[in-house]
Amino acid sequence: MRFKVWDPLVRVFHWSLVAAFGANALLVPTASGLHLVLGYAIVALVAVRIAWGFLGRGYARFSTFPPDLHGATMQAADIAAGRRTVHLGHTPLGALMIYNILLALAAIALSGYAMTTTAFWGVRWVKSVHEVSVTWAEISVLVHVAAVIWESRRTRVNLPLAMVTGYKDVPERSVIHE
Amino acid sequence: MTIRSLAALSTSLALLAGAALANDVPLNDPAKETEIRAVMAEKGFDEVRSVGTIDGKFEVYALKAGTAYEVFLDQSLCIVEFNAA
Image 1 (cartoon, rainbow over the protein chains, first blue to last red):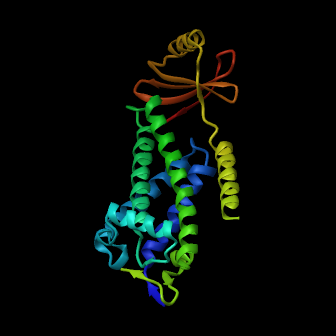
Image 2 (cartoon, rainbow over the protein chains, first blue to last red; image 1 turned 120 degrees about the vertical axis):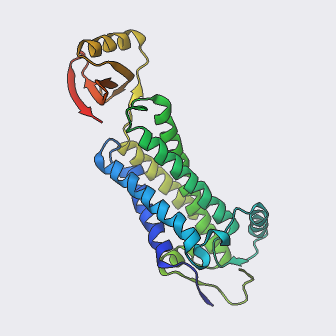
Image 3 (cartoon, rainbow over the protein chains, first blue to last red; image 1 turned 180 degrees about the horizontal axis):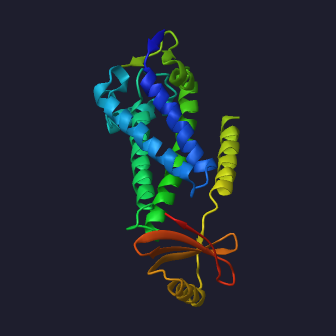
């Protein structure tokens, strides 16, 4: 069965963030003007996504994926037992990863901006906060990618493809959580 | 297969990051730092915030008349480059 889950804004946000964060973390020299431009672009992307979490419809809304430890525990139990339970929107563990990454980006943006100001110019601890939060975000991205591969195999739903097309193709006889 | 490709992916990301982000290392030499601070004061900088080393040069974050500068000095403590923030 085919379900429309991700609207265009959610998908464009996701892949734009991948491109901008990947470029800034791995390719663009940190002292360059481009590094700052991409940093501000990421802030703009996140601001739009947060607004869309309240103004958007369907699975874009934060209310459809609140931080939910009980749900996350149930999903972990499904994973441990190898059950093929499918979530149509963000899964509870996926939601925790989203909030984790948003918070990490906020820490990166704030410390990165501070590094450009006279008040925090050359202040070591600000730089350390920036570097540690970038490393944390990079580890989070690797865990996110591993989890997406794992969950795609477990549920037989191609999650990366869904983030491209907007549709989840769910196998017949799957147990579906709204 | 999946685990192995992820390991390969993370290794290549780490290598790429190492290449792009050649960060300065804090200077762990108080005597040299005192010398550098003296040179900076002589050149009219009011405040030195931090001193590091990068690519065989010294990198100094400093202020002059309220403007922030990133200053590079060579091994003989001559200013070879400086950029306003």
